[in-house]
Image 1: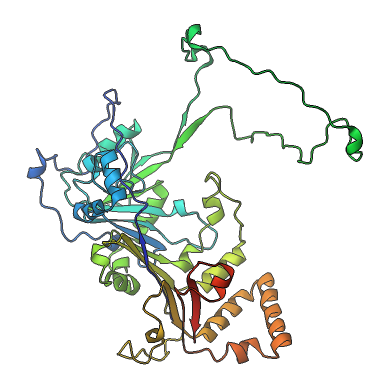
Image 2 (image 1 turned 120 degrees about the vertical axis):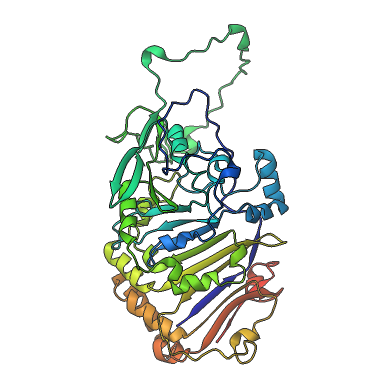
Length: 490
């Protein structure tokens, strides 16, 4: 069973934007030198060794990774964004050309152009290592960033720069021969001592006198007009506000949390994470001859895309592995987040089984019209013996019947098999099972047909769902002027 989804979107915005660097003040704390290698720093950039051309961060990830976002870090690729007005204005405001300065785990006090760009390779990858079991870990507990070191001499003082930005030396340790640096999570308070509260000397003449308008009492309506409302106390249709009580773990202090940062150095790669335990898990995957993401068939096919070489970002995700993470706990501390359902372990296990083998692939690359985002959802684990697609893509396939001016297209094979898989997986959940049985009963009572065999059972060939431009149709009758209609071919 194969599902293919294409979306063609031209946009002018990309989330990884250049961020203005925060310069360190002259009163920064002196930090001891912590070199990345034994080689002394080069006298100048021209004395550095030539960049390594074969550094691929995908070779440092296991084939079973849950998520990987490859970001092109070359100046030439990011320079193409200057053709768009939005990025040109950002460059004028920041004084720097477009660059991936907002890579995860990089401290805000680090200038990407001055500290990272001189030594980083042609691409970096932000990844999520797989969760051991459903509902066991959050995203942050498996998130890492891998940055190749193309110029080791220029990267020799990078740890020093982070130590200056954090204001303290890291804790150093070794795990299975891999050197690790750690800055623990820190709480920064805005509180001022009671005997040293900052005061400003405001002259009284700077405060204008307030011209308060006269307020006349509003006329009261006769109580007889509302005999059903009590006169005292005043009636309110709104519920009483809840009295705020701080949680036991909260104090009267205000401040912010600086997340932890852990770094490992392996050969010509730097690996970043929030804590040492995540890095130790990554180290466990580094055994000789083990399968890597660069050798995974689905990832190889993604890189074989004609536009992959010029893509600013390439996203690869295993939906089955992603469904195992604790989503509710991950977003619990995000401001203004709606309450998220907390699925139990059984529901998460069901979702992981249903989505096993589902791979999402996304490319983002510049075009003359804007940034092009192309996404595909593939599942190749079921029914490997389906009829092969003819050599001529325009002869005999259902896609040859789709009109050229199509906004969105999804195609695949064997709806009957998809329904059997979905119905079997959802039947493990009592609530979902009742919905499926209700749908079967409704179809039987209204149409006199069996949903599984007489309606969906024969849909074992190709199908496609697409949206095309049209001024008439069902959607336009409800939303005049929409000029879009859906169509389904079987």
